[in-house]
Image (cartoon, rainbow, N blue to C red):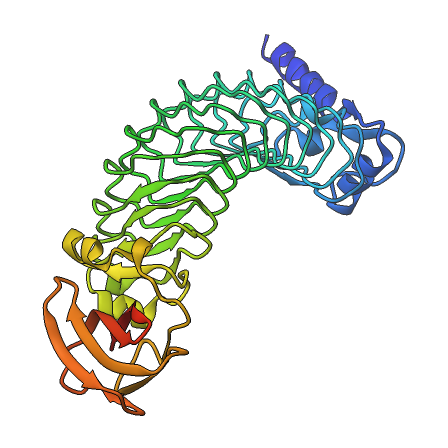
Length: 390
């Protein structure tokens, strides 16, 4: 019996080491030769050389047929980016945890047998209907630059990062993804985005969508927000107390509240190209005026509703009035196109602060930093503008 067991064991080992895997794509086999797993370009590779591999990188090798990958049964990390693949069968690779198949020509991707998959990067393909319901261990997914119109994330409760830019998504249900920390969904067809359940969200970008309003009051961990080139009319970020980056330029904003107690820690701020945005609520108007320059000429930094109401920017009649420099630190000059009689300086609450007679330069040495209203009286009437003192 002992001798029989030895003979059977030797036979099994011989069979294993004698078994070949069919690899019809010459570029695939050549890649294996280059990695030292094969030696002759003959459409076959010794199965024993590949069956135990856990990591395989054959990106950018002009591979169009991945037949043979089924015998790489121990694979955990597979990199097949930037090839010529139109389909791929990874149903036998049940140990797979990381898959990079981006920059191919895939129209579909079946990951229903890859229960251990944690990271999936299939961006820059032609995928239309990805089904990731079986991938409950998924933490990161990138399917940007495809043709996806619908995707279900309800079973992917471990997801922390989703990137889905440049698709055809009109709806994005993330109510089951409370662990999400990063979401990029730029350039889709979204008209609304409900992120109430995503309290761990740190970085959010939804540029180039049709979203009119968004409630981010629950997203108290948000640090970066990119929402330019959209249709936003209002944006309240007062609850986002650790926000440090904001790009909301090129929208339809009429109301922007960034008074979150953290303005001095901002690394970027841009609210330009919002022609109807008159008041921007901030922590310190003078500081923001000095440090945040990417705003429209008609926008003013204010700290309170009263300041915004007093400015009444929409009704200010500036005519040919030019004040320079503005903001001002020491002295300013005025060009009104008419003979000036007197100049009156009011604070934003309507209190008269100072009166000047006509002169070449006007000193602000006794004015504190802030926003003021300047009334320039001439025989033609009174022109009103804002004056910012730094």
